[in-house]
Image (tube, rainbow, N blue to C red; front, top):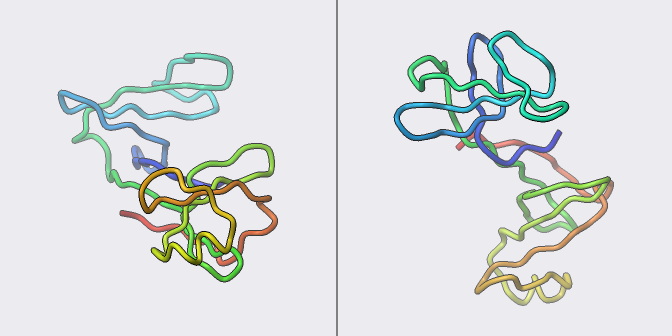
Length: 122
């Protein structure tokens, strides 16, 4: 699983999370669990106080593609969305990346092409 977003550890288990207002954190899982309510088939949520979670951090998944550094910002059906983090426009252009904003370059590639996959907790 490629992660890009918040995670929280609650009762010894890591969950996808969304920090909220008023000191709450929404925890998500794909399987039924005690204290979770099904919001749609295969999606369950529990809202807990932020002081009840053991940790809360943002996770980014980094990789290389064609020898250049990227962060993975999405995935769908065997494809991953990459955002270039090398900061060199000529390299981005040579790779054929989409310029989605000033200095921001992205592309979709087959997940089989990524190398040096690693997660970073921010």
